[in-house]
Length: 364
Image (cartoon, rainbow, N blue to C red; front, side, top):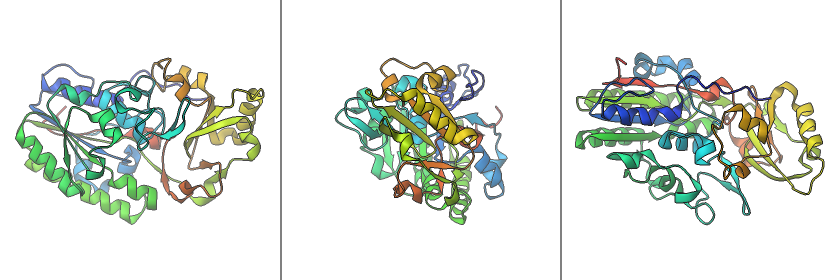
């Protein structure tokens, strides 16, 4: 069974609404003071535990007032960023996994496979918040015209910049250009973590570059700028000996496999009559190595928020979230086995992300 989601505490979905309210000096979930403009730096893959373990390499981030917040479930970029930029949970916005079932079509990647049945203005069901205030998004050039950008960031001005330093410099320039919100996305640590692991020297090097850029942002942003640094999820390193190959018998009656290796979502074949036995078999096989929950159990747990009826078919009939540092693969030659750093599950390392308050927010 899944642990129940706590209704108390600040979540990633509270961050941007709080910054927008702070522009008007209104009360907000984060308790942010009024600021003429807000800068939001989103570091893909930088969990609270990851940052704490490498705090000596990130003096600016470690020196700012911090409190960990909960990202949301599943701990995957598509779902988490959509929650961040809409202020809603996956049960409302409908992005329920890295790969998810598009009913009547098949499994589609929720970051890349936009178009057709996944129209950005309708598949993602919540209104993007950046369209409600003057806003600028700073991100890599490759994402400027993507479906995911249209789905979650429409209404904001898009500024393309390639490196961490260039992105932060562009955010500084945008902050000087006017009031409102500037969001700066940093995918570098997540990318290196997948390839080499978050405990690698390359990951530490990227963290140090980020920390230096954040120090420059604090120093050069105009007076009255509140700065938040947060993340979409954390990360665990998965050693090869923790790769678990799913026995073929457990895939009988499974029509579609969605999700990702640390959080599989299995959709049943409607004609399969032995689904209850399949669920029991998964639980028997994994024991305490994973949380195994039916769709109804996941919805009841509260992790997806209130789930709209239109979103229900997108969620797996069975969700398997791995504990510890393991990962599940249905094929021995799955390319995902090449990833070291991974995420998607419910461990605290994946769920807890930092919220660093700097600039005009530093005293809050």
